[in-house]
Image (cartoon, rainbow, N blue to C red):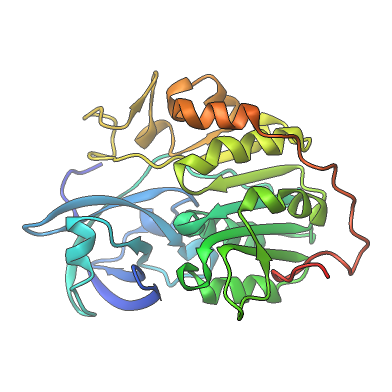
Length: 306
């Protein structure tokens, strides 16, 4: 992999919420390696004179995005993202990648995708890839939690998934407004419903670091095997190729061995989660045993049960 970035032009910008935007980049020239990228892989995006940062691709050409493009959903949190938000369509940036190990898809197995906040962006490509690869419809649950209604992202994707057959979208917010008609609380509060909606046998999880350990532990208590739970870790990756050591966790490099790991792998990597998050996960009460919902009555499209 070359250390030199490939030139790309911003061809579309979509505002997701106040601090998050989706950028579609057209590679100049198009590169086959980006067209065959896997869900969960990331790119290093650079702005000349500013710096470089890692972003997971939120849409892929293999599952609906235009060939020759890279799509990233970015939250404004630092100097690179701050400068990126000042750019308009037509501006040029640099892109390296794709890097890392992504999600393994099993479109024939009932699957639950659990996302918190901007963690929906890395999972979006996996969800699209799963649905595109299905030959026989199997149920899929998407549990998405946000702080409040205004901080939700990827509205277009959520609407597309809601319209897909046998896909159950459950949305929750921690701080509801009178306009909110979905679930209230965090993802852990509704994990039992999400598992029951599809009889999930495997799961993929991405979100704030404090959420990951508790969610994985709850999924195991709900009956999923640790090897069947995939987790996308967030780390400050600098080189993307396992040279700088900035993302080193125990004996693994997140940029090359991840960023997607099975929970079984993470159980052998104690530094993957903060000590307080591991302790909170261990002390969490067991989930209420979910009762399977009759066909046609599952909690779909984020609507609360009445």
